[in-house]
Image (tube, rainbow, N blue to C red; front, side, top):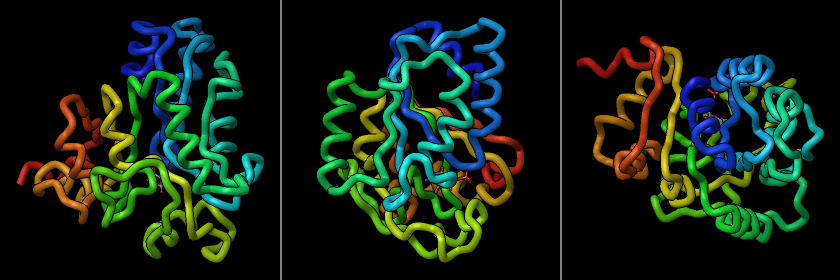
Length: 228
Ligand SMILES: N[C@@H]1[C@@H](O)[C@H](O)[C@@H](COP(=O)(O)O)O[C@@H]1O
């Protein structure tokens, strides 16, 4: 995955990247940092937009996605901090901020390459089951199961925010190219349903079937339900 991203940046040094958080892409970011340190890639003219952020967590909160991006990637490469966008969890008017975020993506010319993970229930970004392909960046409520899964990053489940700002499915589908990374048995069912079921709101990642240039990058465990 890191090699694909580095190749894309080298092919277009002013690329607009869409970036994801979560446990899955940490190794990808570590490999990108290594490639930067060995001079294989530069990010001076790159712009990035992250998928989502918890509402109520400021960018300095250790569990905020802004903090994750700084510590896993941005602080270690030469990207211009002014060109790194993550929805602001501390925005005073999150609905207005979501609209503004869409405008910022459009002003940057749209996303060239979008990196995605996948939730165990098939969510992408924080588009939970029930999300339609026309959804845009907006405020959403997290499902109890997502809150429970993400509690592993917090001291207790009560500390996990119940709402978030997320790019919509429609926003994601406008990216020119999409890479979805999934690892582990826990993701096998979501991966199978995304690729094999008819596209529907039940499995938000299944809407990716409608995109012309999507690559799923899977380990064997995540791919284990595909052969049946
Ligand atoms: N909003 C994020 C998603 O962008 C991420 O893809 C997913 C899976 O996370 P993980 O990689 O930790 O399994 O859950 C989170 O809730």
